[in-house]
Image 1 (cartoon, rainbow, N blue to C red):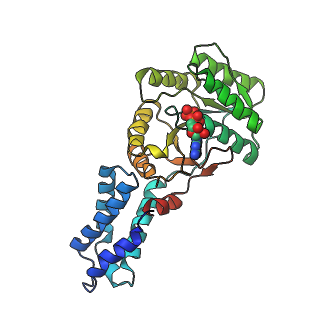
Image 2 (image 1 turned 90 degrees about the vertical axis):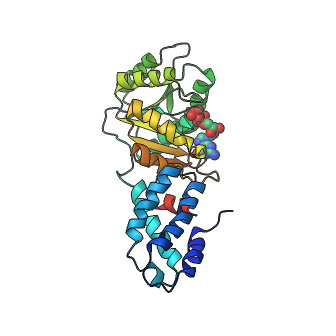
Image 3 (image 1 turned 90 degrees about the horizontal axis):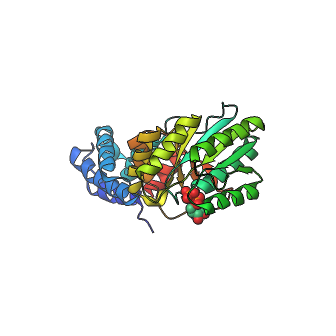
Length: 295
Ligand code: GDP
């Protein structure tokens, strides 16, 4: 379905073979292909442009054209840079609290509730933690039901308070319940809207202030492409979150949003969601993502 960037670059550079040293002009030409590939993968255009400018500096002076497969070498250079860009702080969540409080943020439909369940299941089975899920969506009763269904699936307790319209109070009560009952981790699932709005931002900011979580995670649907950047920025401005969760990577998106988000908010991508099932969670590996983005 996708053209192979390595082949494309091989072709482009083949024409220029014999020049010995890679020149500014042919690097610029091939990087145009790289830029196109990044934009095709949903990387924000400006970010793709800045990125290829950086790679250009590195590429100049390297004997790329002397190699048998200059395109592959160029791709390696690009891949290494992409990996470095998406890397950074080690993944994993802060579990130092007693209990550790994890606040989930993101738009409605991004996969927050599903991921809350996946993370609870992951921490329960892989880290042997006693986890409590807290339902703080006061606007959609269905969202509370959904979290209860998730909790039943993974055998994790869910704290909710139907009818209570104070999300901050529910979050605080959930944390208190966890403290009193020996839970190691509390995951707070919050309300999301279809688009950023002030009321939602104020509410989550208030929850954040009231419970001072050990870890605030921003969940984003990788299929939203370019829009993911604006959403990430808006949430980060308010919450200064600790990490990003990229969901729905089982779809046919290349996942370029990972680069855009990392470039704009400079927060590590910690986990990815790869399906609707509770087991469809994976730690984020920058080099795998770079492979996927480059095709
Ligand atoms: P929320 O509104 O942010 O809580 O989002 P939900 O958790 O309700 O997820 C919205 C929809 O996306 C649901 O139908 C989920 O089953 C689905 N979903 C969540 N994560 C993934 C994922 O990683 N892959 C796929 N294919 N679907 C997902």
